[in-house]
Image (cartoon, rainbow, N blue to C red; front, side):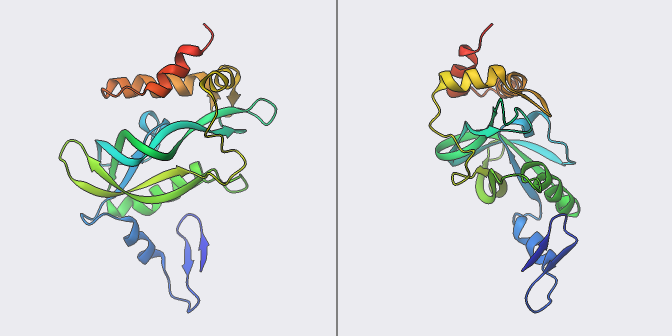
Length: 205
């Protein structure tokens, strides 16, 4: 299969245009695309959406488990970004996107989370997600940490994570701001993340 990011050309070996098929596979049974946000997508989604639901994902947890050489650090002074790592559960937001906007939103998200020319630190997955305001189970797009990439650092002690975050600064700004913005918005949602709280408590004043 040939796939060009942005939705312009999806072709099978028989020349069949697979764009519509792939898009249908990304939609829930109710006809919407759902996107799970657990970090910066909570406070800076950057795409059009029709609704935002408090949501629970089981089987993965939020963790600073990926070195950042671009957005929140540099190769010389790496920062850290969040990923979904195996085990536990994670509360966040599920953005509901109308079907007519789904292709553009997926192209935007892939360019943001899986940029061309950069090491692939995430896998885009379709995962079951519980909407906490209705109890419904939906299929949602989620960007899961790629444990096979060289930037994965899932066993990083919190003290070392705090030191990296305190020093990190990349194209999107200070690594400390990334952490504190995420914590502030989680607290507004009534969510406490003990792992992130511990790292924040270790940051120098």
